[in-house]
Length: 322
Ligand code: TXA
Ligand code: MG
Image (cartoon, rainbow, N blue to C red; front, side, top):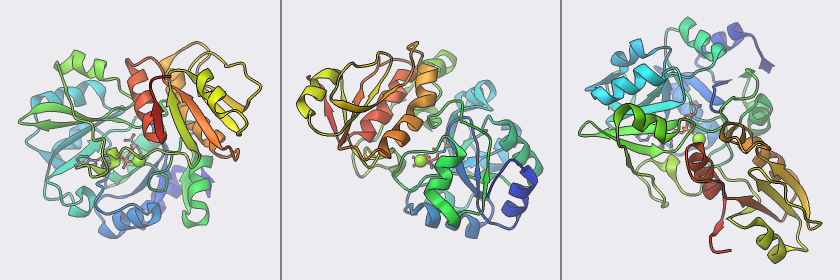
């Protein structure tokens, strides 16, 4: 059921059942963070390996200390400035956090999501919510309730509908080593804004198939259709003409009779708008029975870095030199 009634979501969660929840980044598949059976249901429904840890969503930075300990000053500063918001902090976990959530790690990923419905839901519940993105493992994250419905159909009873996600890309993940910050995942909060608050952040993005944190696998966020990422869309269209081609461009529409579908992420060249539209565009193109999707690499700064990161993971091939 797709509903806007928070009480329905609340009752389901109290029964240790799962509910899809809206956040400002993407929809999450949520369950009671203090109940292992609810947590395991998330892994099962997503077909996600238990080795890939989950994010805990809390109602306010005030309760952070109940779940994490040994919190670096820089982490506290980021929480104070950016929560509620699209920033996840990986911190030393307290005993109360189940090993099922952290995949046996000593650290736990935590954030305060910035969506009025979900914040209200969290306020009314007596437990935090674990919530990975509400998609099957490896697929494109959902940015509206219909995407979630498409993934889980009758296997999920309640989807709390909070409209289209305003950010559209997952949260930025920051961890710490000896209290110094490390970027684990590019996301909706640009790294430049984080560095303005706490200074330089070491970049440590996993790009192979056996990463420490498997969510950062290179093949992730992927459409089913073969996807190419390129600087020069027109050249690739020439190369693949005759096939059924879909195109994702940043700002400027491509003029070509060889393409079947085209998605322009932002006519104004606005990064926020582009990131908000990215997954919706990927979902739509993926439904068109295309032979290939050609995606344009966008300017590599600010949110552009996060969009390029997701396009790269979505693509089977980067053709840099064309
Ligand atoms: O925006 C978001 O973060 C969304 C919304 C629903 O909050 N959630 C999300 O969750 O993207 P998920 O599970 O799709 O991605 C969480 C990532 C995974 O890549 C996981 O490996 C990583 O966080 N992660 C979780 N706990 C971790 C830990 N202790 N250390 C390192 N990485 C961790
Ligand atoms: Mg995910």
